[in-house]
Length: 194
Image (cartoon, rainbow, N blue to C red; front, side):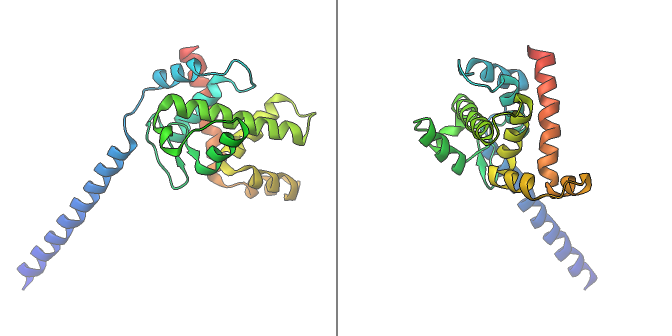
C-alpha cells in the first residue's frame, strides 16, 4: 500500500514537472530571438525619426524594460520588442497615417518605429495639456502613460491628495518599477553605446 502511494506520488510529481518544463519551453520559444543590448541600441539609433522630441536612449530603455531584448515578447496586453498594445497601435496608425499590424511588431525595426511614434504621440498630448511643462516632465509623464495609460496617469495627477504618502500609494508598484528600469537602461545605453 505504501509502495503504491509512493509510486503514485512520484508519477504525479513527474507529470507536473513535465508540464512545467513544457510550459517553460513554449514560453521561451514564443519570445523568439533575443537581441543583446547593443543590437537593440543600434536599432533605436538607426530608426530614430529626423524630427521629434524622443531620445533614442528612451526607446532603447523601453525596449529593454518591456522585452529584455526578446523580439516576440508577449504579455496580456502588449507585444514585440517595445511592448506595444493593440490600442496604442490603433492610435498611432490613425494619428500618423501608419499601417502597422499587430503581427508586424515581430520585426524589431517596425516595433521601434512604432514605439517612437507612440511616445511622440504621448509627448504631444502632455504638451497640449500643459504647454508650460518642461521636456523632462513631459517625457516622465509620457513614460508613465506608456506603461499605465494616459487615462490612469491623468486620474493620478488630478485626483490624488497632495501628501507624498498618497502620491506614492496612488500609483501601482509596477509603474514605479518601470521608471527605475527605464532610468537604469537609459544610463546603461548612454554609458556603453553612445
